[in-house]
Length: 142
Image 1 (cartoon, rainbow, N blue to C red):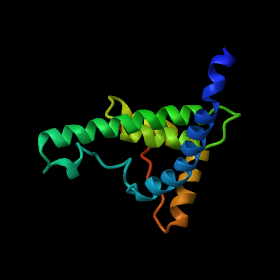
Image 2 (cartoon, rainbow, N blue to C red; image 1 turned 90 degrees about the vertical axis):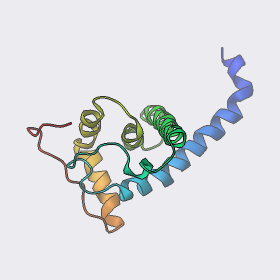
Image 3 (cartoon, one colour; image 1 turned 30 degrees about the vertical axis):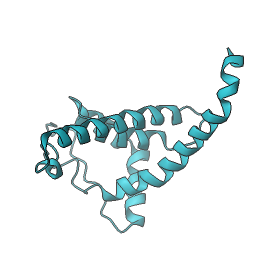
């Protein structure tokens, strides 16, 4: 099996390095741009897409979801102990891009981990942004 993969090793290593560097750059930017009340407020759709032509709107939604799937898969790969990277943060950003039922509960399950929330709020504090507001577990989540 390894002999069949060996010719692709340089490509796999290059893609892995690009994904790693890309997440190191993109994840902090996305976390800083996320509104502090992201998990508190109730959102419906993407207001930025409201004025677009329906074909363009659906194209953007499909591309957004494809990027979300890619980030979730990359985050899962980075969660393996031998692979460096920000696995859980990458999975969180990927999930936020996906249009899934129960998405809010998945996001909150990740963000409520003390180490993850501490890392997110540290990144936000370095950028001069307020800490994320997380709802109580008792509060009904949509």
